[in-house]
Length: 110
View 1: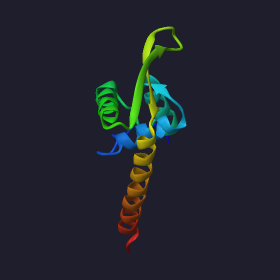
View 2: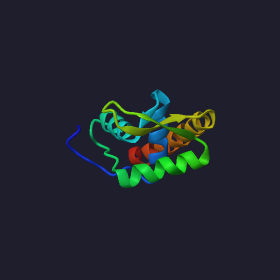
View 3: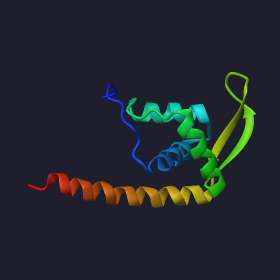
View 4: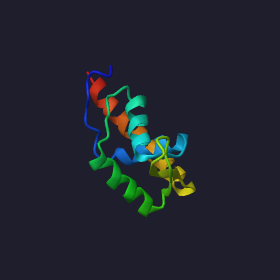
């Protein structure tokens, strides 16, 4: 399954980041690795997409970042989900479920 790489659908990166952070706080590289791991390598989030998204999510108040030491003893910004972010994730998941259901109905129409 992990052999085929695909682009993340427009509008889903925020939801995927929020979901990754709902598991535990992480730094940017950790988020990228977690999404790669969870999707079996199908989605690989590049820094040019990830860091602007993290900045945007922080501006919205859905995540908070704090500088700390990483596993490699370098300073890294660790992000965690806020209460507002957890609420937003629920909204995003509900919306995504409706989209998937609608697309599935179209594709299964005979």
